[in-house]
Length: 180
Ligand code: GTP
Ligand code: MG
Image 1 (cartoon, rainbow, N blue to C red):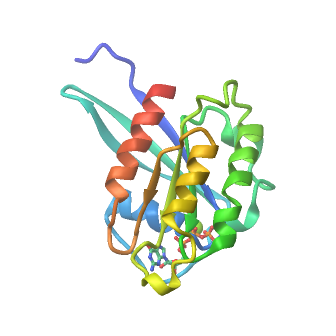
Image 2: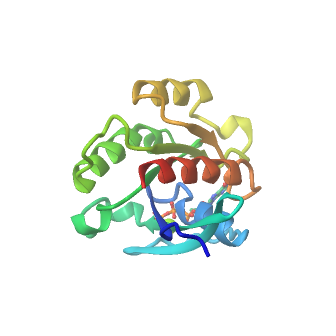
């Protein structure tokens, strides 16, 4: 039996309404996708076991939040103890990209993070499957943002076509484990 304490990695997904937070979580945890949009209300989590090394696993607790509610309805207790924060925008929606920084700033305040410089964030530019003419947020702009916020790891994802979702969550787990 492992002598190590069972680890729970608490991951919180934030971002504007409709960017694909729920879809990314379902793709990662259940490998499922639905075209239908149903706005999330409140917050809910799904869990997935992740392998750490040959004989150790951790439980990743992935919290999906409601883009419409901003930070109003979830109390500070919700954000406490977060091990990683995922910031999602939609590559076809510039407003959702502009809001990334404020989602990050508000998270840091609500979670009362003791060292904001080292707290693990990951940025996901979702819906990368859409045709180029609809993509209004360039990769270059996203790279510049990630750099300006302290080199936050950045992935261009598609929950729809399963692009980069697993590699993004591997990075999320890695960041969370370091923080935990
Ligand atoms: P809130 O719960 O309101 O905060 O929204 P959300 O961020 O959870 O968005 P959700 O996952 O519900 O997705 C919104 C819509 O975008 C749905 O119709 C999804 O099917 C669609 N969508 C999500 N991910 C993708 C993607 O990777 N590509 C495309 N083309 N559409 C996507
Ligand atoms: Mg949702």
